[in-house]
Image 1 (cartoon, rainbow, N blue to C red):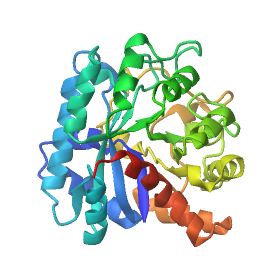
Image 2: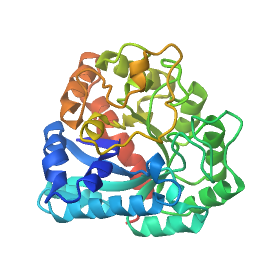
Image 3: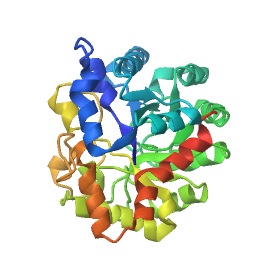
Image 4: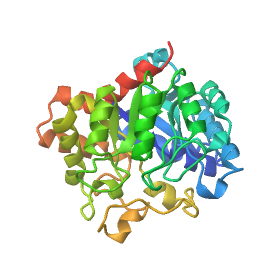
Length: 338
């Protein structure tokens, strides 16, 4: 069983909304080939849509999500509750779950998060790399964290049936949010380890320890910019698994692929206005490209290659279950309603 905590495929589905069934033709077969059982699908407003178009763009992606489920009812199902997880597994269907990557669509109204939750969002990250009215992302200077408005939003999130996702949060935002939302199930849906690749997009050892103290999980991210400055291989990616396991234990590592090459090559991801990339010092300039990939791990169809690499490193079946699905599911089950 494979659970992937982050994929921006909704950008592509919304972009190709005039096709009869873009999910089936562009993603479904790849998810099935990779053995994916649950795919978290992020809502993301691109830079050129901000600020006034962010809400409209994410609503279009929600429409694309619902269409993907409605047009493929025998193979996929929407996940909003713990019962949905159980029913998807029993029916051998792929579960699709909504998350939001950056709360720009809320504008300045923290109460709008309730609407997104009503529409099925079950994981909320506060920022992308840039600053927004609520918090600072990883591309911002280290001093800023949650704004007053952001604290109010995080307090609200703490009472909702969602996972608080701290991917893309700078360190101050990260620790502010943990303090303000002491009851929220917590995850960093897609990142790596800063000890191995020195970029703000990765987590410091202090952050990893704080995440583990909350019984949270970091999703292993397949973007070269977080893997290694120059070597973009499954071996270097698996170094991040080893580091998390050695530092805080196997309960705290999962999957959060963030595959992007297909989105760029199809024309769905318009990179203009996304802001400066956050890369490691001394990195090959190509690492900043969203078309760059980890060798042998370019899309969900390549999850078997990752599993084979984990086996070669000595991870047993019980370990694989934890990394590939059970750790993320544990956090999701704490958040989801019955």
